[in-house]
Image (cartoon, rainbow, N blue to C red; front, side, top):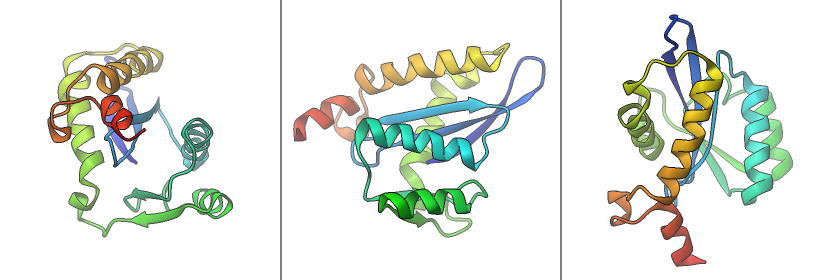
Length: 152
């Protein structure tokens, strides 16, 4: 999991919380808002866990939302290991960093959005395309959903 930052057409900043599965590079969630505190991160993780089941571990950088007691409590309650990358070493979280670059180059950097709702709608629709239609060369040219189906 990781954050991205951008601006609306009127200059207001917003954040994007991206959550992907390291195994099949599937986009599991994208929360977009002007502020995404630890409570929102925990809520988004809870929603994904209810939908997909709990992961063995969650990898992130050492941002304040990720080192918060709220996330630590969720992890302890659910039996999830939290793996933090070494500060200054984003390559240790290469999959989500590559995903962030894909988000930026595929759509985020191409449009000026007027509202958070507009960015969220676009991002939600793009996730479906990314997971179901867009071939991922790191997966041998198949989609994340196809990779998941191969092991089901």
